[in-house]
View 1 (cartoon, rainbow, N blue to C red):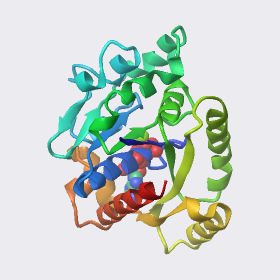
View 2: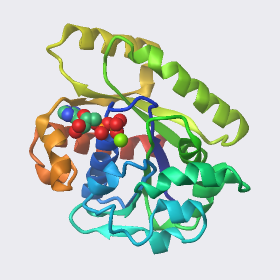
View 3: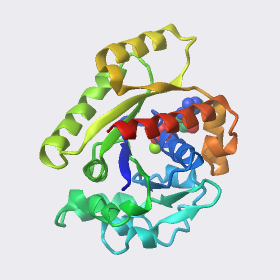
View 4: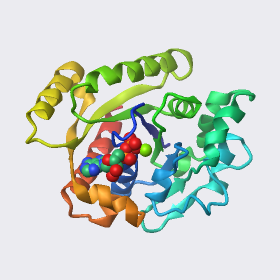
Length: 256
Ligand code: ADP
Ligand code: MG
């Protein structure tokens, strides 16, 4: 049965999408069967996995509105080695359309249950908000991966997310836990980043992943080729770090 993880942080530009697609590619590389779900109407994870968001016949929008199943709507990305349930602008409308429907926060969970035996990992790329879309992700997941930059306000920004996760855990999804905090875009030459990294470890202990993702321009270049860095330039430092992170995730879920 698939382990389902949300990549979430309500801040934009912190590395959620980069983490989602590169972890998906890294997991595929180490032999895992992966489904990547894009829950952000921007569709960056979709495009970054080699799937054109403009020409998709069906997307996660259709799945949330129960007009398609995941097996109908997901496509396999040959280049990336994992399945993609894509998103595009249409998804922005789902937020409003879901207000009227029953079990609105459990739509994704219900749909994923049907395909859980086909995958080892399901990764969900969340939008930069604590919206109904993110709530669908959190309700469906066993755990949350939180990418964060080691900046001055990093800890402060976590409070809202941690509180939301606690509420979802208490009211909607007792399985939900923070699996870990992933330090991304890390530059060890910056003293402040080292300090914040140490603070994170003393605050969150074992919840901080051992793997650190460095700032690496190859990871930033890869999306313009419609590829995760791990595929675009496998030997880049950032790509090696994401493959190491994939291995760390495989080890972690065996302990869950
Ligand atoms: P989010 O999904 O949280 O909005 P993204 O993953 O889109 O964040 O990342 C924001 C920007 O930072 C993108 O331009 C991305 O290419 C770049 N980026 C992300 N991680 C790294 C990294 N480790 N090194 C260099 N650039 C990165
Ligand atoms: Mg994103």
